[in-house]
Length: 131
Image (cartoon, rainbow, N blue to C red; front, side):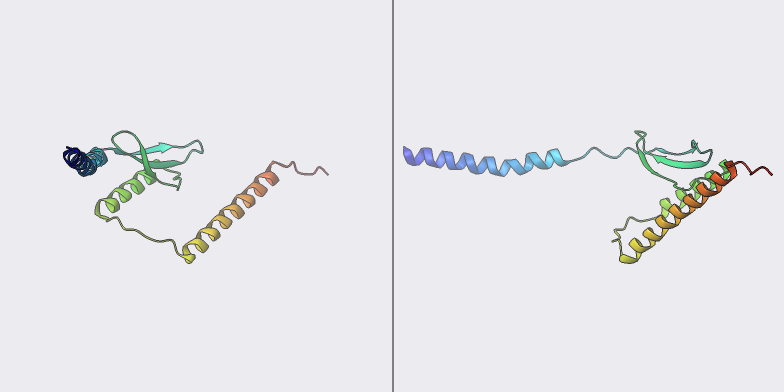
């Protein structure tokens, strides 16, 4: 009798362990990606136009960092982006030391440009000395 109980208990335990991966695999299946979405061109608070890529659920996926003075320039950039992405493949790329150095230079240049612009703006707002 004890032998029968041990066998049944062991059998139940083995069956439970084999069914657990099936349950987790079913849970791991994700919903299919909805087709659609759009590339939107919007005017920002700075008066420049940028494009945004949004999926079918209106979730932001990508966009232009560059602000375009003219709406048509932003539309052309969005069309170019669409053409490139349509023919592109996804690749994994590691960041190299050169990339980090280039990013640091770009950040410094942007800060210097902003500082220079701020200086120029400050000078233009300063009243000219009276003679």
